[in-house]
Amino acid sequence: MEEAPSPSKNRLPDRPEPNSTYTSTSNTMSTLIHQEPPTAAETVLQPTDPRLVPVVEDVLAGRRLSPEQGMLLFETPDLHTICGLADIVRRRMHGNVTWFNINRHINYSNICTLSCSFCAFHRKRDEEGAYEYSVDQVVEEAIKAQEAGATELHIVGGLHPRLPFEYYTDMLSSIREHAPKLHIKAFTAVEVVHLQRKSRRGHLGYEGLIEVLRDLKAAGLQSLPGGGAEVFDDRVHEEIFKSKIKSDEWLDVHKAAHEIGLNSNATMLYGHVEKRRERIHHMELLRTQQDRTLADWRAAQGIRSEGGEVVLTGPDELYPGERLPMTGQDGLSTGYFQTIIPLPFFPDKSALEHLPGPTGLENLRTIAVCRLMLDNIPHVKAFWIMQTLDMAQVMLQNGADDIDGTVVWYDITHVDGASTHQETTVTDLKRAIREAGFVPAERDTLYRRIRRDGSDWRIEE
Ligand code: SF4
Image (cartoon, rainbow, N blue to C red; front, top):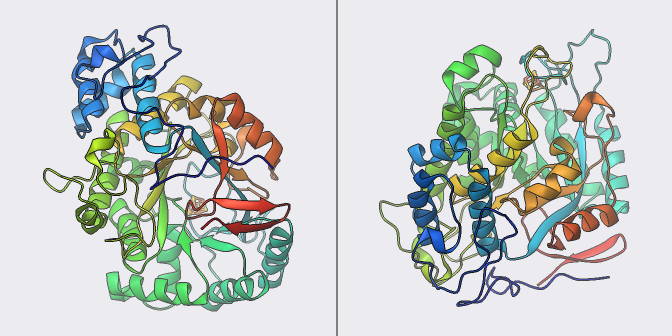
């Protein structure tokens, strides 16, 4: 089996060496540079919008972009420069590698006490199509996934009004017992808050969150997915997911998870009623929380900082130690946000069916803006289930370094409402990655490299 090159200190051997060349295929960009570090934006890219010149210079120098610069990234007609810049940053961080994993999604129930207007997944208990899996059914799927060689189980569902807290802890411990090789990534922030209430610790606030997460961790939970963030804005919250938790609660759940050593992801659901300014605000809140989480790690790695900012996207010389955080490194005793996953809104069958949803170019731009603004989150995922595999391929050239995995039973949302079971083969994923010009590398949930022999696999030392 072909293998991707191993990273050295998270730096990849096929990254351009100092004094070598960045090549761009874009017509609007110059194609070569021979400077280290580049001293002027024009030497690497040729922005057709002069307002972008300071933005390009800041990114190349490893300086954080302001919210106003973030707005410019959304508003400029010069999409080529934005995407080219995101590609430079992505190659600095991950070289030519694109990550994928072999995972299984299980949506244990679509019964939900809420009715968010953008959601086509939820049902009421007596509604046609409502379902819930028993613990045994979930375990059966987990065993099948392990036998098929999956490394991760991704489990989320609606806010079920009747299932007791023990259902969730039993589910985790039974999977741990019967499919011990699988990493269990489960429960979005709103589900965790729901479980806090179920376990009668709702009144305990943040301490109650810590307690419930400790219980879930003890039962087998290993990380949190990033779902349910939507867009961190009160106006949007009021308009389309009024009863769901607000941004401060979502961020608190992830802070608590990080505090007890669980890694997590973050999402942003865009292309509905939100404005681009609200997307930037969403990114700012994530960025600020991640700065705090990574403060000790940054100091331990000798990364200089003005005002506590942790910027991972600069030129190599800014990183005397590690460039990217990884569980177990010096200064990292907590979890952190590993990946940002921008999720385009699909109007079909939701209460917002009248909205058009985002266009392909808007999806491309949003991926690139996420890479440039979220300078302290290591990975950007082009989630092919929602972006389509074809579009995800393009996104790999515009800031994304992860394409997710072979996914089955993904019922939450799907392109065109065509199928509730979506899966692709490893062969197709690898072909898509190679066609985009990258080297496929299989990872586990924590971005450790996997060595595989059929359905058997191990984590590379
Ligand atoms: S988005 Fe989640 S919380 Fe909202 S209705 Fe759908 S399943 Fe329920």
